[in-house]
Length: 218
Ligand code: PMT
Image 1 (cartoon, rainbow, N blue to C red):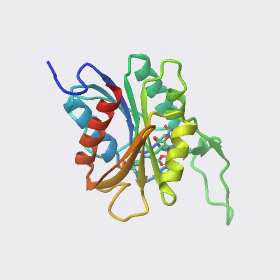
Image 2 (image 1 turned 90 degrees about the vertical axis):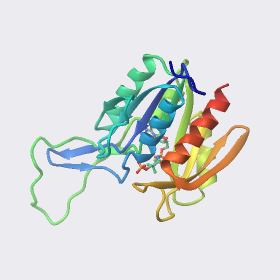
Image 3 (image 1 turned 60 degrees about the vertical axis):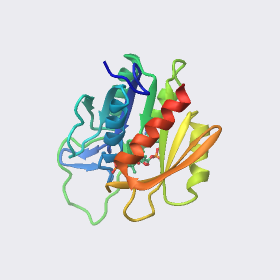
Image 4 (image 1 turned 180 degrees about the horizontal axis):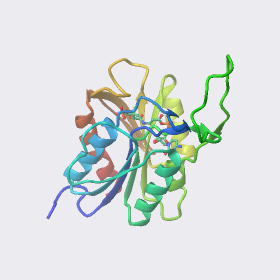
């Protein structure tokens, strides 16, 4: 039997990038490696939680003892996360770097080079975190905000707009932290407080973040 600050709790985490297909061989994506989300999954597991990890395409090992559900697009992420929350969820943590837009339609065949320029029509993707936070049975929701400037302002704004309980602001303008690195430095904001974590390894930040969440849901 697991004992720990999240013992008996169900935690759903999104991680990694999404891929939005342009044609059968091309896609739009970003530099998320999944490291931050996977570290949080391992820390939540170690704190005694039952963990579902909804993961975009990454090339890092799956954490053991975690239910990993692979997805590709933002649409897939929304349905897999919704289903995981339907199964029971006390805490929802969105670390994924979801593509905000996708090609309006995916070409059935590889697009040929014919003209000197081309443009792609893009449409907005659904927001998994905002959708989960708006549910009448919403769990405790934690968002991430990757920003390159005015980090605190944008993070607090996202917390309010998306009706989150907590937001983790990630200044991705600093080399060596954020996307794809092993280390990170963040500021966590909740309604009545804030705390700086790092710079240190994503594993260490994940453990401290899980401890903060456990305190808040007591
Ligand atoms: O994966 P790594 O290489 O370890 O890098 C970690 C990270 C930098 C990707 C991570 O720490 C991080 O900051 N993730 C959030 C990335 C981001 O750009 O978020 P955002 O500002 O677009 O979105 C805000 C929040 O809404 C996030 O919690 C995001 O998961 C969520 N969201 C956004 C859009 C969308 N369509 N659905 C969502 O759920």
